[in-house]
Length: 426
Ligand SMILES: NC(=O)c1ccc[n+]([C@@H]2O[C@H](COP(=O)([O-])OP(=O)(O)OC[C@H]3O[C@@H](n4cnc5c(N)ncnc54)[C@H](O)[C@@H]3O)[C@@H](O)[C@H]2O)c1
Image (cartoon, rainbow, N blue to C red; front, top):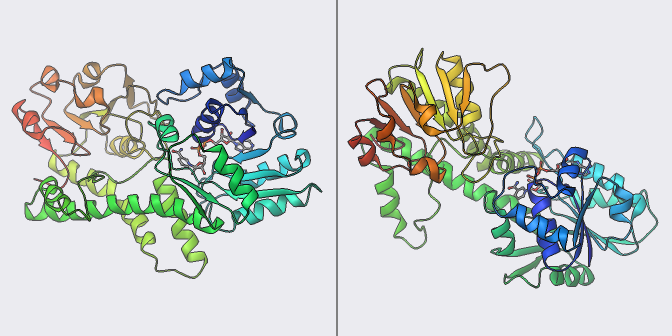
């Protein structure tokens, strides 16, 4: 099949390369010329494990190419997959202008019976609006469908090759058959549903996971007051099969490019359809305040940040990605800076230096970052950080080790003579 993926971000490049590996002819299209130039040379413009090799392999086989030209990318495409960004607008609603702009641009070149698929995360009603924009500019017959994406950054190639399910939102047999064929090499259940159900499924999955994190963070707050240990509580509840041991991450709150945005967007969507009191409004509010609540607590427990040197370890929003969108460090570093701390930071791949923050210096090793520090803040559990021997950097001056996601062995850290501060335990 001839497939075009519009938007070569995290989702677009991974999808394009994986569809190419199934033997389809794929074109990746973006308006960002720099990105396309890099991709055309076989270079992934961001860090994502396994993607570089897959990309180059498919380019060398002649299955995958990249362009900024809508004419070139659309004129022969049977399936057009829109994977552009859908950030939250200031009021929390999904900002759909990139989706609508891509619809405007593709319409003049559309081939008869092409299928326009929205893979971007969008609220119900968006596909209909997108197709209406296209219809105004073309006389050819075309179809639409929703194909939400569930991959996780950091394991995006693996997730795309081994999805838990494929969700296809369409009322049309022709569209379903074609999209089912596109995914038939994957050993995954294919769920056919209404367009609105597919879109709701995506928001629901992320909002549920974000709510689970918020829930355990709320319980962690109680544990900090009454002397219980949140990890022991998790272990105890996890034996209940309805609950399970997986996906409990008490910490500074959820971050990243998807959870905060998707919760905000679903909350805003609920308000827009008259469901003002929806739980997700509160989840979003609690999460936005959480990191500052904890930073204030750590500030008290360490005797204040003023003139202290803090080694901030982990700048991406989670391990195995260089994505710093809504990463905890993007709030921690300005907070520390406002409280007159000196900041030294480290991440194996991510770069984050806020403009005007000459107070922060990013180093190229953990060892160097911890030199002269008073406090270590272990923010993200990159394996390199998690397995580092912090006894090597312990000094008289360096007293505190803050484990922002309860990932470190507290007993070991205490044996190395640090004051260990975690989440949901004293
Ligand atoms: N990143 C994730 O982990 C993830 C996972 C699942 C779903 N999603 C959803 O997928 C969508 C894409 O996310 P992403 O993280 O890949 O975004 P991204 O910001 O990394 O990439 C979006 C790309 O779209 C391009 N673009 C914008 N307007 C365009 C236009 N008119 N024509 C062509 N290209 C255009 C941008 O230049 C950019 O390269 C979002 O809706 C997101 O919510 C993301």
